[in-house]
Every structure is written in structure tokens, then in C-alpha cells.
Length: 117
Length: 110
Image (cartoon, rainbow over all chains, first blue to last red):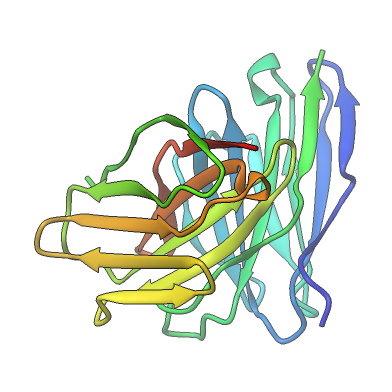
């Protein structure tokens, strides 16, 4: 079955613009998480969605937001882009259930590489 | 606050060697631990998931162990190959999120 699909794979924006990234999870998975990867900070958790609700949130400013649709696809948005937002944004899906956020394997997509000029 | 550390940061070995990658975490009350592989510019590929009740998992030439009491996990790679060259990341699952180490960059020379 198909893996986690992220679009676009690469994009270049300028400071002050906004960007929307998309993630389609593995069929049947209802939990979608987002992570930011930078050389300096490594991989950091942004947020997790389950059944269209944000269940967990990392320590990022309000410029970072997300949503999940009824088909489990998810989008994340970054507004008022800053140079420091340049990163690889990774989406992960998992078979976590409604009261389960700690068991089960997470599967990642190839990521969206964002460059802010 | 949970912290995950991986040592060494980089490792270069000749082909055919058996090797061990280390991962340590500060809070032993973890649920699961997952090992990933990342090739340059790519996403993460899941290698092994160790449930908190397990002590080890095996997949092909890979074996991962978990010792919660000492806050350590090791990833053993047998008979290394050039194709194993990548960055290896460990992560503990806590509160609905993964907490990652900084990774070990492995280079296997032919």
C-alpha cells in the first residue's frame, strides 16, 4: 500500500510570505504528525492531528498552524515566513487510536524542503 | 524533560565490520523507542520499533536492544555494507510525540 505522500517536495519563498504544505497519510491511519528538521536543532515536533482535531502541539510560534480533513489528509501552514523557517518539514502517519498516542510505529514521508530567501 | 543522546555523532568503518550505534535517554519511563534511517535529503525510514515491554527486536542484519532501567538502546548492524551509509536516528515516543537524538552519521567504506 502507498506510503506517506508529501507535496510539494521543494519550494522557495521570500520573507513575509506564507506557505502551505500537504500530507496524505497511509490508508487507514488517522493520526498525522508534523516535524521540522534543521541542521542546528535537529528534528522537532510541531503538532499531531487525529480525526480533524489537534491533540498535541510542540513549542512553535503561532505562525505555524495545521489542520486535518475528514479523509485524514493534513496541511500545515507557516505565515509571515522568516529566514529561520528554512527547513525540511516531515509528516508522519501512525495507526494510533483515539486514546492511544504512545504505541505503534510512525511512518514518515519524504518531506517538503522549504527555502526562505 | 526527556533528552535523547546518540554517540558517536559520526562513524566510519570498512565494509564487513559489525558495528554498534548507541542511544541514551534521560527518563526511563518511556513507552516505545524507534530507530530510523535517513539518507541525505530524504525522509525517515523506520527500521525497528521496540515496545517498552520488549528487550530487543531484529530485522535482517539489524538488531536493536532496549534497557529501560539504564536508559539505553543499541542498534547492532552485522556485516556492514556501503549501502548502509546513512544517518541513523533513535527516538523515544512520549506524550504523543517523538523525541529524537541528533543522529549518528555512518559511512561504510568499500
